[in-house]
Image (cartoon, rainbow, N blue to C red; front, side, top):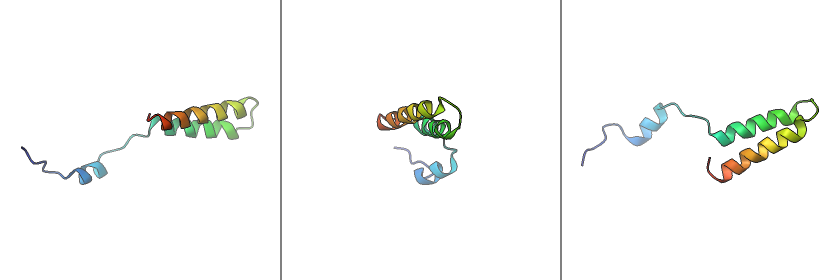
Length: 59
């Protein structure tokens, strides 16, 4: 069995991380929710709910 020369904890801290799809959906939904344009209130709420559902199901 080979030993990893770089401990996992250190490697994880140095690798760039990607934002989760659910987080992006929640942020876009919140942005749409607060825009003062007709229709974005409901659309923002639906997108944010889709992001929360994605977070619940692990996306």
